[in-house]
Image (cartoon, rainbow, N blue to C red; front, side):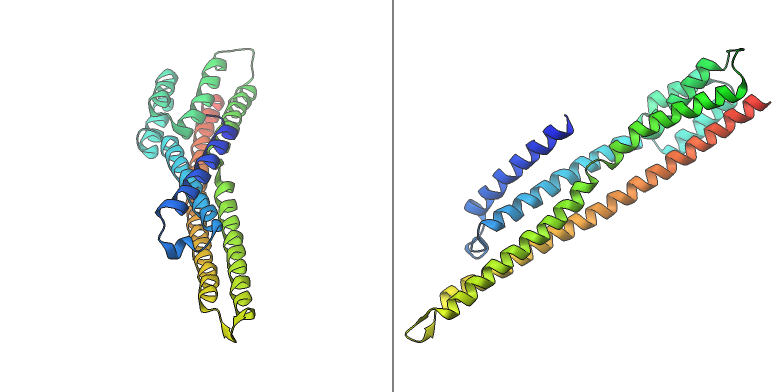
Length: 243
């Protein structure tokens, strides 16, 4: 599914779910928070959708087995000059690291027998193939991370807006007296609206910030692993060309 289509679909579903939950399933004291509570629920549903999408994507990016075990196997195969075996191991492993290493190994395997190419050119071709594959894989790992932080920020602002509207209603109740007595019901409704929106905004923002930090850490770990694996493969190829 294209990214733009995914964004539109999750937005529409989230809004529909948010207003349905607000109108049909929330207790009265939460429903008194007003329509902005439905927006906060929609933001939370969107957040959960992006969290699930990121979790699935990063799980696929890890590959089918341990990255460390896979990398040791690839290095061993390259040391034995079994380039077809190394490519087959990458195909079996899949994931971001395997895709990047596969591109470099395939390119080197294609040019290593070309006597017309100097060793430096072969190494450069391999490095370029790895960099091109890396440029395709890394954006997939980082996709939708900005959405998590954006939703957390928007939720904070929506919650603050609901708080402000609730307090305006509460203060308005103190200004409209019936027989010199403050309308306690309207005052309570205003305060309840303010607190419900405050709580909803904070909950959504906390979930978004925690999820963003967790996934950023995972992506950083992936990037470090990719750089380390690429460096080791390139050093091995350089040593073969210099010998």
